[in-house]
Length: 226
Ligand code: IPE
Ligand code: MG
Image (cartoon, rainbow, N blue to C red; front, side):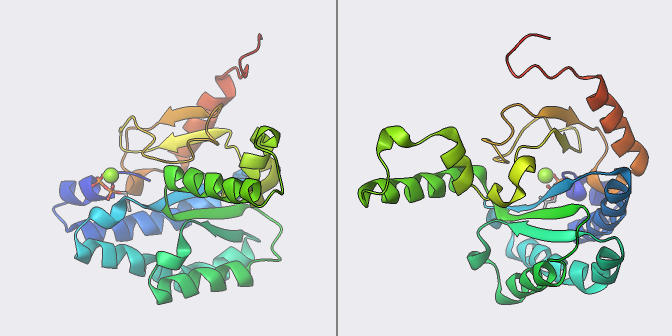
C-alpha cells in the first residue's frame, strides 16, 4: 500500500491525513476483496525499515491499527473475515500489539477471507530468523544440514500458518513504484506482479478488478512449458 504521503501532498494536507485515508481505504478494499472471493489478502502496513521515519509519523502509524480495529471489528465479524498479523510484534508499542492480538483472538473462528497484516515485517529479517531456527535444530542434533529442504524453510516463515496460500498468486503495489521493498522475497518467487499507478488512498474496486483481469490473462508456467 504505497503512496499515502504523495496523495496527502497532492491534496495539500499533512502526511498523517494520507495515512488516515489509506486506513479508510483498507476497510473498503477488504470488503471488496472478501466479496470477490479472495482467500487471503495480505497488506504491507509497516516495514522493519519504516522506523527510520520521523517519530511523529511512526507514532501516528502505530496508532492506526488501534483506530482500525476499534472502528472496523464489527464489520469484520459481519463479513466473516479472519484477522492475522505477521511481523516482529514484540517490538510494537504495547497498545498496538494488544489490539492486534485482540483482533486475531476475536476473529479466530471466522471462516471467510483471511485479512493478513504485515506489521513491523521485513522479509530479510524473516528469512534470517528462519535460518537461525534451522541452525539451532542442526546444532541440537535434531536434523542434518542436508535434510533442510524448501518445505522446512517455508515452515519457519511467518506465512507458514497460511498453508496452501503462503505464496501469493498476485502482488499489487500502488503508486507506480517498481520495487518489492523487502516484502515476501521467498514467497513471491512465482507470484504475478502488478503495478498500479494510483496512490493507495485512491485504489478502488475498479482498480482491483483491473488487476484481477490482468492476472487472468497471465500464463503461469513455473519454469515449465505451457
Ligand atoms: C505507504 O505510504 C504507507 C506506509 C509505508 C506506512 P507512504 O507513506 O510510503 O507514502 P509515500 O511513498 O511517501 O507517498
Ligand atoms: Mg512509500
